[in-house]
Length: 253
Ligand code: HEC
Ligand code: HEC
Image (cartoon, rainbow, N blue to C red; front, side):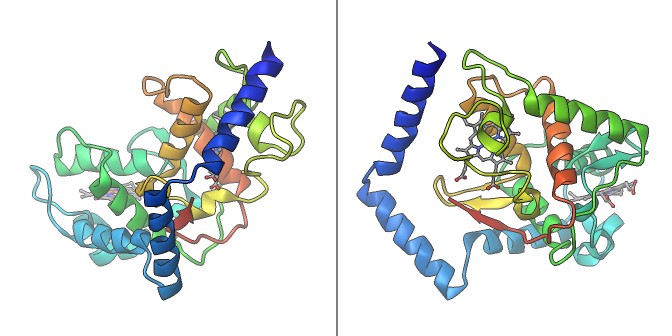
């Protein structure tokens, strides 16, 4: 049974890869052209994120720059150390969670949406660490605890399909789904290029979106109600990206 599920799954991916969609083709060509010309949508979003960073929002009449400096100059290098423990939250937070908290608690923004504006700000903040090396530390007990949870989740077999993250993403995984790993997420230190512009669906995605997307592929309901799982995996993968140079926004197909 498991074997058949696997085969069907592989065929499904193959079919998608083979799909000849003229509109998609045009988009692809356009994207490559933009890339060659050096204008990437991700960069445009990051620019917009900078503008929003400096503009007041919410009931408190504050902008991000009110606390983090014009253009976020005090946030230089912050992303390279994230996720990490924050005293004011008494929790480990990743980029998305941290920004959401600042908006709710410090700016009086009610009902923070994980929309393009939000992600543009997140992308901009991450660009402030460009050129620096990822250096997530596990100093605080809560960081070590979250890391352990992330590691467990990485190898845990879940859902009807009995997949784990490792099955698709670890070269040393015990059971292989594909002939090759899809993306060697840990070895490639991919945390260095998120948030990324994802050209296949023309969207800006954060690492949280990507992890949720993979949970979806595993036919496991995105753990909206146990958000900590996403943060734990993010911490695990960001820690594994240690030494990798940050280059945001990434450009992902
Ligand atoms: C009223 C002040 C205030 C405002 C406004 C504010 N923050 Fe924060 N922010 C904080 C505090 C306090 C911390 C925790 C600092 C710490 O513990 O090192 C923080 C932490 C952060 C961090 C993590 C920094 C690090 O060194 O790890 C990021 C990223 C961040 N904020 C982004 C934002 C963004 C983006 C906005 C606007 C949407 C924003 N903040 C608005 C007060 C604010
Ligand atoms: C069934 C296979 C499969 C499983 C299981 C899976 N993923 Fe993925 N993952 C993918 C595919 C396909 C991509 C997209 C590759 C691309 O963008 O070309 C991807 C991409 C990613 C990326 C981004 C890679 C990059 O290039 O930056 C991350 C991070 C990731 N997955 C994390 C996870 C995590 C965490 C889990 C477990 C919760 C998981 N994946 C489970 C198939 C899988």
